[in-house]
Image (cartoon, rainbow, N blue to C red; front, side, top):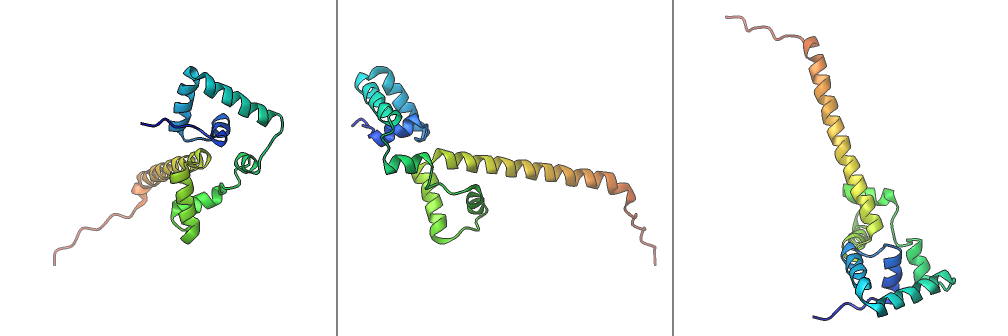
Length: 142
């Protein structure tokens, strides 16, 4: 089994906590025992701190490929179509963008809470208005 050898871009993503959780955990574990990896991480951090930025680093740092929350909401509701929906599916599932995954999880939690509150409200309305509903008259015999 070959060992994953992270690129400098992946090390930068690690420093920005932007890698998928499994890769973050693996790198963190490997940094404890691998002096060469720690040295590479220090060099990458030094270049970043010195202001040696690449277009890719700027793109990732400002998350230019990440959609806004409104677009993510449209995706969750299933109203986003075509290439836009395909891109978001790729961005969330294949790229594994942790920022967007966190936004999606937050929106799903808020939606579940809103549904729960709505159900509770309907139940309370029914319970408090039951006495005001007209009673059905018994059917009179013919």
